[in-house]
Amino acid sequence: MARYLFIVSRRDPGLLAFLRERFAGDANVEVILDRRAEPAPPSRRPAVEHRTRPDVDEEIRARGYAVLTLE
Image (cartoon, rainbow, N blue to C red; front, side):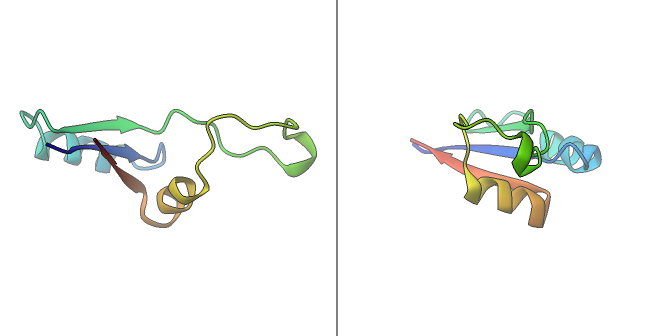
């Protein structure tokens, strides 16, 4: 059975609380706060960035959260 991971923007703690309450008790859903820092300006970015997911970053910016399906 698929599992789902909600990653919620640091800018929306109310949404984090709502989703945690909504999915409380559902073992197939995990709701977490986005732990990544805001992107550094291009001049300060390291040559190699680790753990980047531009699609996830864009979803979080646009909607305030992203949902990943974990198999």
